[in-house]
Length: 177
View 1 (cartoon, one colour):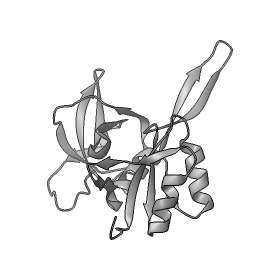
View 2 (cartoon, rainbow, N blue to C red):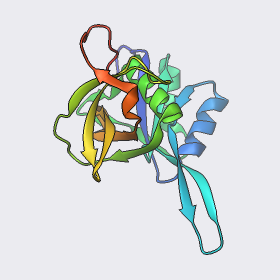
View 3 (tube, rainbow, N blue to C red):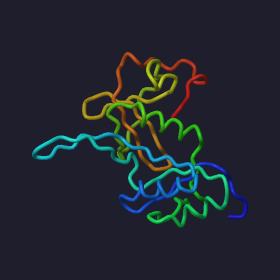
View 4 (cartoon, rainbow, N blue to C red):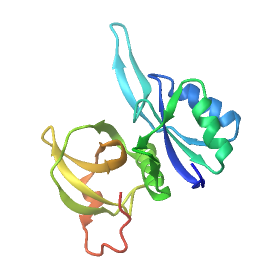
């Protein structure tokens, strides 16, 4: 790596070590993003809401120096940075911001590896995700918003209220996923 490019990179972790990796990176003031979603689990005697990783075994890190890059490789629980050939996978700032919004404000969020055909392009007009463009697809006989995360080859599906959507007229003003 001759010249370092500041930005968001993706660390692959050992199974169920994401929180450990994040806490170690934060000790060294490395900015991290570990999206989670809430899930209700039922046992024989009770129900409990737990937080599960939105992308298991992945942690997003914003690196600003080569030292932070090398430290991220040596953190206990991290297996290395995601690569495509010789290039390290990077995500744009706006993509991270949109995943953060969806993880924080989305209802009934889940991640899918399924391949979906292109859905109707709409714009969210109300609520915390207003102004974002999206696709609407049918999943399990329900309409859901689809957010594509091409880097991870995953789709985020979100339940929505139909009154929050309108047909996309001006592509330039809508923020895209």
